[in-house]
Image 1 (cartoon, helix red, strand yellow):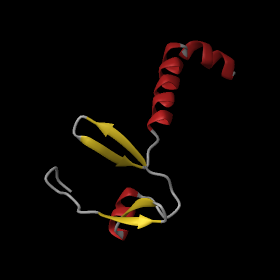
Image 2 (cartoon, helix red, strand yellow):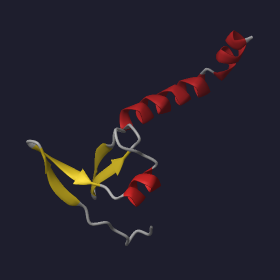
Image 3 (cartoon, helix red, strand yellow):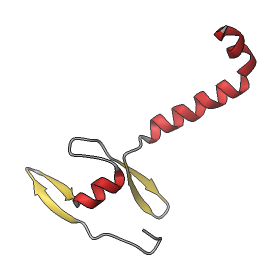
Length: 79
């Protein structure tokens, strides 16, 4: 899908809440299935719907930085 591609999604009542129906093709492209969790991340252009937890990504980035800074120490501890 290019930047000009879009998908029209229908909002539906689900009990006292509102849900979005995602077509099967969309679920396959996002590599998710019923019961998985999606995250709505606010961006300057609107919301990004993603299966990737932004908090986990932030924590992993911090961990990578720590491992990079202390590479020699971690290598010595691994022996």
